[in-house]
Every structure is written in C-alpha cells, then in structure tokens.
Length: 517
Image (cartoon, rainbow, N blue to C red; front, side):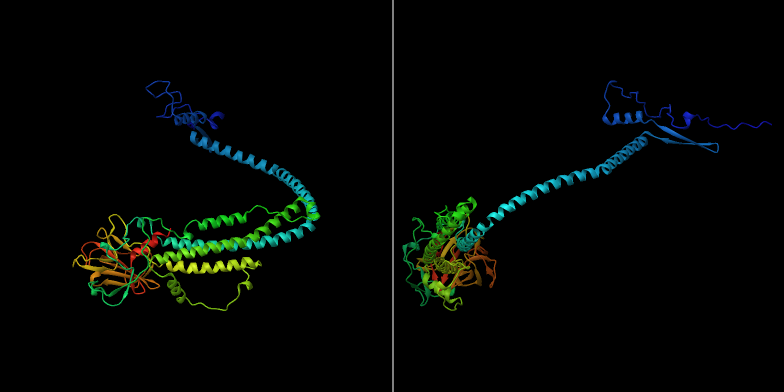
C-alpha cells in the first residue's frame, strides 16, 4: 500500500518574502484603466491622483511564515505601508535633529559666552573711563547740585501747591456748571414780567391775607413785600460770571508761562564754573529756577484777584435770584461750626516754603477760595432750572397779579405755570428732600421739596407722583407727571420757589441760571 504524498503550497525565495500579487482587486480598476466614459484625457482629482500614487508605490504585499509544515501569511495593504513609511521618516528626522543638537550644543553655548564676555569687558572699560571723569568733576558738581536742588525743590513745591489750588478751583467751577440750565431748558421762554401788565413783587412773606388772593385752602396767606430790581431783559447780553468765562483759562496760561519761562540773566559765574560747560549750564539753570520762584508770588497775587472777581460774580448770580447775598453768606456761616486761635499770616509756612510773600498771598487766596467753595456748594441747592421740558412745553401764566381764570377778577399768582402734554415728566430743579406729597387745596396733587438754607420748591396740579415724603432727590430727578388736578383749567404744572417763608419769583431764579455757563 502506497502512502499518499502530502501536498502543500510550493514556496520559493521570491514567494516567501515580499510578493507582488498579479491579481486585480475586484471592483477596483488598475491605475492604467480609465472608468470614465467621457474624454480619456480628463484629469483626475487630487485625491484620486494621491490614491493612485500610493497604490503604485506601495502595492499590496504579503509575508509568508512556514511552521510545522503549515504556511501562514500576513497582508500589508498600500495604506498601512504608506503609514509605516511616514512614521519611519519622522523617526529618522527626529534622531538626526537630536544628534546634531547634542553634538553642537556646547559649541553654540561657548560662542555665545565668548561674545558676552567681550561685550562685558568693553562695557566695564567704558564704565571705568566714565568713573574717572566723574571723580574729576564730582567736587565741583556737589556744591552746584545742592544749590540747584534747593531752588528746584522749592519751585516744585510752589508749582504743586498752585496746581492743587487750581484743581480745587476747577472743581468749584464744575459744581457751579452742573447747576446751570441744560441746553434743552435754556430754549424754553419764561416770563420776564407779570401777566396783564400788572405790578408784581419778587418776594412775599407770611402775613395778613391778600384781598382777592390765593385760595386759603392752599395752606398759605401772603402779603406783598418790596423786592429787588427787575431781572435783566433777555435781549441784553448776559453778564456771565468771570470764574465761568475765560479767567480760569488765562490763569492757566499764565502759570504755564511761568513754569516754562525763558532763562533770566544769570549772575557772573566763578572761574570753576566757567572751566566746564556742564557746570556753567547748571549754574545758569539754577539762576533761572530761582528767578521763576520769585514769579510764583505774582501768579498767586493774580489768582487772588481772579478769585475775588469770581466771588463778586457769584454773589451777583445770587442777587439775581432775589436773595440778598450778604444774608445768604451769613446763613451759610451760621450753619457751620467754626473757631480756633488767631495766628498771623507771617508766622505760617505753606508746605515748608520759606518765601513770606508767596505764603501771605497764597493764604489770602485760599481764604477767598474757601468762601467761594462754600457759596458754590450752597448754590448747587438753589433751583436755577425749569421743572418741565420737551416739545409743546411753554409758560402760560407768570408770577404776580393776573386775571383769575375762574373768577375773572385780578388776583395774585404765586408761581409760574408751564403748560405741556398730559403726563410729561416733571423734574426736581435742585437737590433736596421731599417734605410733602399729596393733595393740598387748589394745588391738587402737589410735591414740596426742601433744598436747604430755607429754600423750598412746590410742584402743583400733577397727574401722578413718583416720589414719597422723606426721599432725597437730585437735580433733574423725575418726581411726577404733568396733569390738571386741583384748581386748574388744563394740563400744566404750577411751579413755586420759597425762601425764608417768602414766595419768590421763579423767573429770577431761572434767569440767574441762564447766566451760569
């Protein structure tokens, strides 16, 4: 019995290792095939070209492994071969870079250290030369520098003192400017005289009842008192306060000119200074700084004059409202607790400055500044604006005697009426505290605000009230809406200003506000 032969795949050296298969992959054309039914010369897309190149460069290969008469093989497709080739290139590149970096690193560091040492040696040599030159001039410079430093320090102290002083002045101006009329308010006309050509007073006080006057249910009985001069007509050019005009700008220009003034004639220089240009220039600068220091007193004197004129202008604005500025300042002083020992001005030094003329002038100007600051602060609580603005808002009835719209007889009108659209915003004309909210006689729905220093404002005939008693409000805070409640013939707001229990002409306050820039 013959034993059958055991057949297995015949392996050769070529088929054992890498083999290129000659069979086409089913469903995929060879690179030379053209599946397009169109033009044979049509270009393939970039992805197609890449795919073809990979399959041509890395055809499918198989690794055969024979063990115990059994043959196994592993297939490596084009994609896997391309990936392995790329990783191999990356690895070889990294090995090359690391090798070069390790071999030449010491040489690179050594070259850099050498250049740094050369630069450091050159710098030290140059520094040694400069030190020698400095030592030669040090003796002469010490005295000159001390003299210059003393003059410069005092000048700097004076300039800082003046700069702080001018900044305080600018803050006062800003506080006054914030209390002025807004552009929209300044376009609203106001009455400059009483209605119906009847005489009117600028102030009233609580006293005997006025015959044919205001409804006693309104909560006040009034008697006419003599008032100040009539307000300036709107046809004339407003006489604005100097502190709100160009006076402050001129003062700053003067300060800048003094701080950067041209060098003055210096005293004759000694032989030591004349031998070296640097010492000669330092001596000239010392003389210039000393001359500038003497001009600071002139600047402070000019500042004192401007502040004095500012105080006069601010008092004039208060006077335009119908308030006596002297009495108003006494009221301010009485509301503040002041005192202390009396010290002559010639015994006081400002920030260590030894110039007596500068100290005296500065202290006088500072005193005026304090008065100006107090007055401007209190002026911020004076109602200088109108209570309602916008399209369709206009004054319909002025302060003083008029024909009563209900009785058709002459009667006194204690405020100004501003007619406008129903529900228009009514705003506070100055900061203060709401003291009354509710209905009061002929006022209808009314709000009263205490602005301090005896000044009150009232807003009547409101359709709605948006504040409550005790609330603190700022200028232009919305407090209610225009309406026609109470003794009223149509939508408007009745606006009154009171000072020391006397009703005042609101026109004077609004006109005074127009003179504040």
